[in-house]
Amino acid sequence: MSTANYIQRVSDYCSQNKLKFTPNRAAVLAILHQHQQALSAYDILAKLQQQQQNTKPPTVYRALDFLLQYHFIQHIESSSRYIIGHQHAPFTPQPLLICTDCKSVTQIGLSESLKIELDQFAGQQGFKLHSQSYEFQGLCSGCQQGQVS
Ligand SMILES: [Zn+2]
Image (cartoon, rainbow, N blue to C red; front, side, top):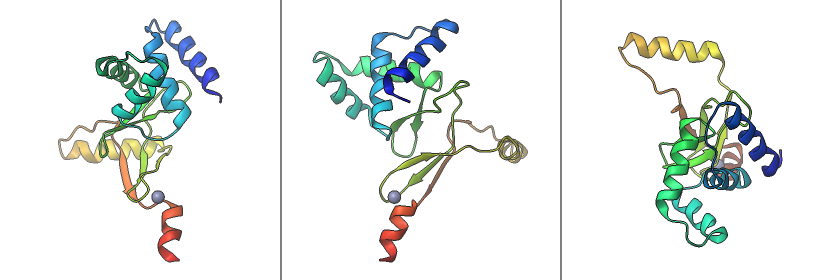
């Protein structure tokens, strides 16, 4: 999906759900969609400043807060970076496979039964999981091949 189409889709979703999709929020989301990789808030600020020179950090943080709240993007706790989320409604957080070597991030669909099982197991320990922070660390296929040769 092109970035323009994707932004239009999110914009439609926001107007249907009475969410305020401001130009700054759209600009931050477009940057994450174009790059398709995890970016820090600083990376996003630098890219936004190429378009609008006067952009200040709070603008980026406010936009990120909104986009996170509605799961258009995901925050990667282990690297403090942001990545585009699941691109279709319902916008729900996806578990992430994170390569510890090249830092690539892959979103995976976790089956509902596995999510329920995780929740139940955590619940038995009296623990409440934050559903948006399933992060699995390891080596991606490319980096494994690099290690063999
Ligand atoms: Zn890798």
